[in-house]
Image (cartoon, rainbow, N blue to C red; front, top):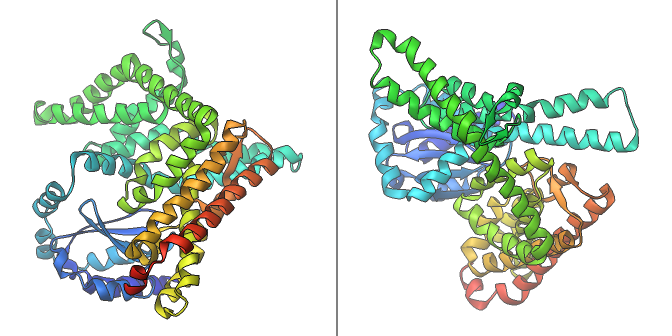
Length: 462
């Protein structure tokens, strides 16, 4: 999207959501502009959905979410924030913390709040995970083919540097999200990856650099935040600048070395062992369940809570075996939408929506098809889940046979996941299994929707 187009979209969006005085917060994830609104009733939802570039609208977790698509959302968000920066001081005050906190208490359960905050720690890391994951995949291909041996060590360094220090970024974001000083969170989390921890013994076991991974970093920074807040309320102002950071790093650092790293390491190992065991012993069933339930998680915005699990698996094994299975949900959605397109051939408006949203769906961005097609119609959403379950079962079945397919990064799915594929087999096998899963998801999603998803009642709603 051209910068001028992003600015035009932001300018058109602002009055449709009630103007700057109605906006209490602005953020974005991979595909959605997330707005906190003082009064959601002031939104002109019909005009908002009809706005060019808007792929859907979602209300979840106390936020008003405008689906714009990957890449586009970052530019529109920047332009939107620029518009808000021109508000007066009085308008900014009117969007105070009281309204925001009131809405959060009213609309968010404790579980959703916890998942949202954990997701907020990891979502900003996704662009780096994608970039480094793609480079890692390219480097692996070059190494296996024996090409450009002078370049592959440099590519390996570029691709691996971020993952080697991801704990620091997790710590920084954790402290920022939970109200601490970000740099202190990063400082304590850095202990997890410091080589010198190999000289420390906890519970009779010598620690290893990186033990506990991102989970250990998350716990360490969270503890540091609470220690810092405790100190702020008790340390005299004249000594605060000296004692508070020192006590924060000391107390949280020692607790990390002599408890959190060991505990988080055990949890991380359990995650990897459980994932491998599930796929090796119940792969088809596990794939069916995961592929079938993922679309509802996307609909609720809870899929981002899986990011720590994916990241842990990537740290341990170099790839996450869960993402290719979960990606099958998008395939079922594509198949279901194609069936709706065929069955409702006289509905010009709906077919136009499907044509515009289908390319994004093929690349793994499911919100346009979910909110523009299957969910409003009802039953096609359920048959799309059936397609996702079938694709997941296909990939899980081959995992039972020993052909594990994973992804070196998180974020993309659908066709966009092909460059990130990795596993314990050759590139040809990985491509065949993943492509077979997609085709199965397309076919089953199409067939079940064609036969069961488009009823007379569905036709009456369009």
